[in-house]
Image (cartoon, rainbow, N blue to C red):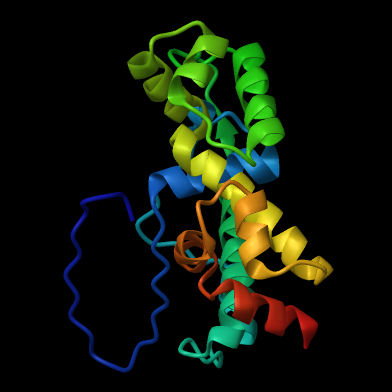
Length: 212
């Protein structure tokens, strides 16, 4: 259902619904990560009602009986949710817009900036550094980065840091506090706040879950 749409229902018998909400930016990020489609080139048909047998099956077998309040199920539910989104994109027939792409960073600039963030995630990275790599003002760099990556530079950097935290947690060779400092966070509390917001559980719970 397109953004800001309204619907009114009059039901004569029992009905079952699944509501899956996601932002346009998140949809574009999935398309970029899974299908390597430039977010500026993504176009989906607007379908108010559709019958998706595969999507319904994923929901019925993987999500309908899940305990949404149990933190231990959070990662599994997130994985199934993303699988549903990918399946939806495939079944709806993702299309690339043939018109010239307007705005955003060049492929070379994107590669340069992203590689730089991957190489220096462990320390504070200033916006001026990234803008300088792209040879743009900070204001224009932020706008064009989001057009190309469907997220802000800060959000992209945070994702890199959280992924690095996950890798180090699994090694079980370092304390959570040491991992936080190694991954560019000011302290364990700072890291834990962002980790839980993005992953759904605390770093300690994540370690326990993976250990089990």
